[in-house]
Image (cartoon, rainbow, N blue to C red; front, top):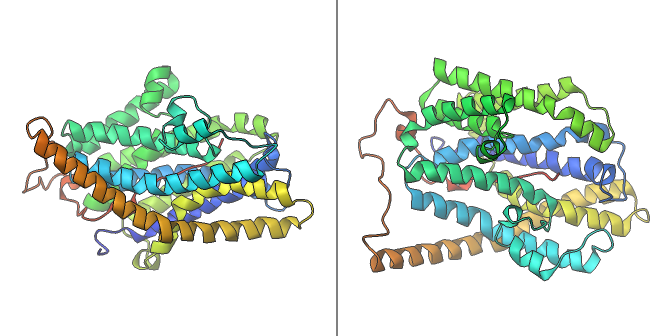
Amino acid sequence: MTRDTRVNELDLLRLIAALGVVFFHYSFRGFAADDMSIMPYPLLAPYAMYGNLGVELFFMISGFVILMTAAGGRLREFVVSRIVRLYPAFWICCTSTFVLTLLIGAPRFSATPGQYLINLTMLSGFFGVPSIDGAYWSLFVELRFYALVAIVLFIGKIRSAQTLLFCWLLASIVLEFAPQATLRSLLIVDHSAFFIAGATCFIVWSGGLSTARVLMLSGSWALAVYQSLRALPEFEDYYEVAANAWVVAAIVTVFFVVMLLVALRRSGALGRRRWLLAGALTYPLYLLHQRIGYMIFNAFYPRTNAHLLLWGCVVAMLIAAFAVHVFMEKPFARLLRKAIDTGADRLVRIFPSSIREPTRLPAEPDLRDPVATAKCADVAGHASEEPLEAG
């Protein structure tokens, strides 16, 4: 893959976002509420409390990557790439967390076989079944975003992505001030500003800046900052802390600035260096770290030094994420893709008139449309997910 088709910086940004979430959980969230962890870590807690914003950076990256992946206009390839990207690591990590919960989770954590089986579908959040790990909540947000993109692909309107993103942003702003619960949920209004900004950054990356794109990024930034600050009092009440609104606004702003630099290809040496391992670790790290980390803290604290436990657990989770990716996720993903492609091809042969690929982009793309002209070959490795964060 060339520099033109892989945005190297996104792999590094993913790992930074994931580590922000890890430290949010380990040094702040677990002890601060819900009796998840008995181990406090006051040395980092005042700073780690802002790590939950790493999930929003994940959503921005997802907006960029998913539009890149979908820009080829092929619904089948988009769906298969999402399944292969998300499910193998999820099944492995969910199973690991379930088994460890049975072994060392009591009395704070528990899980049942039925709960585990429903979790394996990655749809438990839509059926009111508790997640094996609370961090899975962000996957349900991602799946809703994927569904919106799939609908656009199905109706053959991916070339109108910029117009659709503008309409989504406008609707999100209206629904922020005139709430309608069903529409807010369908349009993912609580996080849409980040998805829209990320997708707009991809359009900038592929086609350059324009007045409309600057306005879309500005509107997304304003909505993202407003929503982040509006949520702050609830966060402070829940965790019984005082957070700094300026810090929250600054972090969100940094996300937008960094993503814009990536889109403008102005990231310098960071963009020229490949960060494949960093990107590969992110998804399994996110899936594994939270509940397993809490259970380890509860099993060994206070007999074991808190510094040793926290930093040792971070290192252990990175090693476990590497092992999952290299020895399980990659081989499993290849087998799953082969099985899906074989099954889909058989269905097409059996029902040739009823199962067909939706209309693809023309061989000679409209050069006025950056999505149609973007070089999007072999970008499934960018897909996210991730993920992210637990409530």
